[in-house]
Length: 325
Image 1 (cartoon, rainbow, N blue to C red):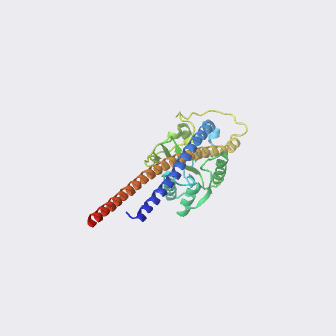
Image 2: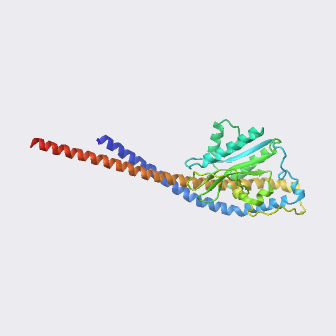
Image 3: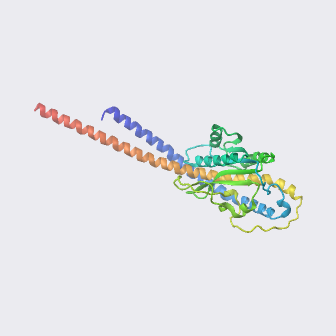
């Protein structure tokens, strides 16, 4: 082996080891952020569940149920689709699964002749739909890594403005539901109009439409649910209750609708953040393991070639000595 080839192999080994340090650091950072994201989900869950219980109670009242937030149109004219992706990559199939699911949903609505408006959360969703020629009504950046309630308020305000448009009578959100460190599921949730039955049934309401990421990040299965913004987990029959409203029920619900949207969106952002960090941790761990294996193979290759070179030089010296003798 020539000196040039040995230097090239040493450079490659050094480059692989440098990359390994980066991926290992990113893996550790993602692991620490997963813990923070799980604590945020646990802290927000009582508020989210209380809001869901309040909505279920209103949905059980005849007077309140006449409000637009509960009334489903017989014919859907327009849809607003909120897509929650990440601002960064290096997280395996996390972004691609969300974007493919959202694109299929948008195409289905367009094929049905419906107006479809896209609200993109995350740089990846913004770039994906803009590159493919979809009209993005509004995009939000910098809120998926560590989401705050103020971020959900900004998105909720935009969604509320879309709901006021006469052609929009359905709002759906596509995000990744965090189930555990090893399992995250892409779900499509209807946030307007509110479906009381879905609130009663919770995240496992349906398991028929959406990819699920397993621990390896590659497997998919289907599911639709409410995630951290879903609400009650126990299914129960929808029974109607009589309430007396002060002020009027329409005024009360009009003031409640923005909070409902913010709560549901906030729960989705928290789930998406935890799912992103879990996917990034798995991806970076796989990259670190691959770098270790690659560096080991390169080192073995260099040692073998160097040993062959040394053996050849020894044989040449012995042959020269015998010729002189």
